[in-house]
Image (tube, rainbow over all chains, first blue to last red; front, side):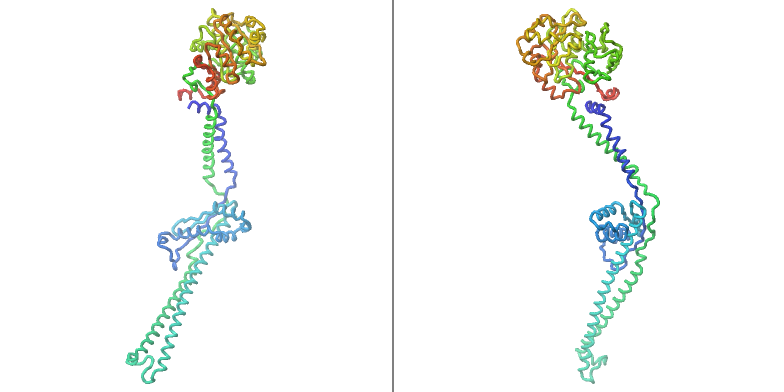
Length: 350
Length: 231
């Protein structure tokens, strides 16, 4: 402890320099850095009402959480990000790899997508200029809107294609069944068999009964398929018209007029500078203590040696250290006849 | 300690080089050296070698301080300071006396030993400057003549204080300490490292070592903090 204190007070200016200097430097850099502008938009979202084949987990997410997750995932893809950037003033940055990297960095640091309620989604962007912040928010929203619409359209097309194919198959089966029935009836004796004739004729002829049964089944199957197709078309039409309600920009991105006040910048950077400076100062102190292997006090001398006494340091002000040492020695010896190195103006201090 | 330093400043300001009123400029300086020789137990008679690990540690300051205090406290005893550092002599210049003839001349048998004694402000204190620098100091100190000189000094003086060269600078200090009855070791604060001190002490006969003096001690820690931590 004695050695640590001694080293600290001996070099206190040097040791305290990082603690004093670093917060000033860090604070100056933080305040000198351009203050960003933030623009934000609010979007109202609803859960999809059809073809929602998500897993059970999605039932527990609110529509806003669901869409937030979806948007954040999309933003991790190159293609979606490219689509966003192409709708913004940064489109030229995509020409080279460095520009693309800077854009990725800009989005990573500046864009925030988070739910602000069950149905409300907030998109914020911090950028160097207010115009850029607003343009990027709008670009993200537009691209996402288009993406959502495209996804819904694709799913709708898939459903309609499925039911159309099913209807075609049912119609084909119906035509085949009716053709077989007509052929059979045409080839049977004219007096006994008529399609739709007396019950006794159909019952008496099992083959006719089977053909009739097939025809009836194919007819009902075709009707069912037609009904499902009509229902799918109706749902798709309704949902596509209603998607505007399911994804609605309720608060458009505005042009920010003042920079964003960031508490972190104001408080945390200088505080971090102080902490960093303290760590550096402590390291410096440790290094200086370790580097000083000399004896500084009587307590550092071995007890076995026996300390006879301590002569205090007597410095000569205004003289070089060499001449000062001579002055001190002669000052001690003065009583015995030694001569001092200079005239009456010589002064020594402790 | 602070009062002593303050008086040092005032004294050095007010003194002139031609002052006939000789006094201790460091207040309490005589008591400081008195305590050292008392604890070392070297006040009676014999030869005392003062050495250190590195040059500039304060051997001459301690040698002269002890000699002056002993001479002042014991006017009935004859005290001498022998400068054995043949490469870096300072005594003659300090006391304003002729550097030659000195120890070198006595070792070369060119002059009798008594002719190299120099007087001081104390009647019972003499100086023997080295008269160096010389080309072959180690050769001179290894001669039988050196041992004979020390023997002769023992007969002329009750107490002989030998200011030796730095132990780690050359081997002359070892030669001189072998001729002494007691050895005092000086450590300058902030100068030699623990390893250098240990190396120097290893070259000295520990049976003769009477103790260590810490020179130029200074603490940068404020007094109230030292009180709080019990330093």
